[in-house]
Image: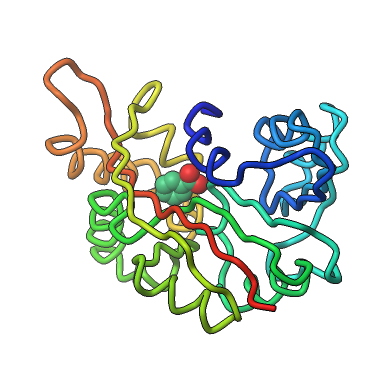
Length: 233
Ligand code: BEZ
């Protein structure tokens, strides 16, 4: 859903001649748009399949975890869309972003924010809890509030110009089950087979009354956190 990245791309405002790092580039759709502005872009992602997809677009994409960045004061900006909530702990990521930037470089991003997919998180917690598992321990996600992430950014040496929570109800193309298969593997993977599909059905039953509308359309309760910060010299 690349059009959903438009606001954060606007906030980045890439210009010709800049060197920009795309952190968690996915398939490179947004990276391509940054490059189209005339910037020279390096993209990283932890998933080899995503890096292959980005490379097939002609992007300089590399397999790297956001927690293990080794770039050295070489970028005018670091950009990230829909990826930072998969990277924990945030301090390790921010230390690498800081090191990657030139003095006064900017860090612009959008990620899952506080309350993101709250109904789904609560349902996962209930269903795994019935099976003796703690969903919060298993969660791969980090959904900070604006105040909490502002503090993380400031502690890492950034001045925060803008940071806000943006509720973004998101229509799912089909239903909740494929979404759970794609995004919630860390939870269901902790359950023995057989039993995963019945747990998945229980989650769907719990969230259906709040996430499915009268027409049968599933709308996930996405909440984003969007920010722009500058590295203090
Ligand atoms: C995402 O990566 O877009 C995402 C992850 C967890 C919950 C919602 C969205």
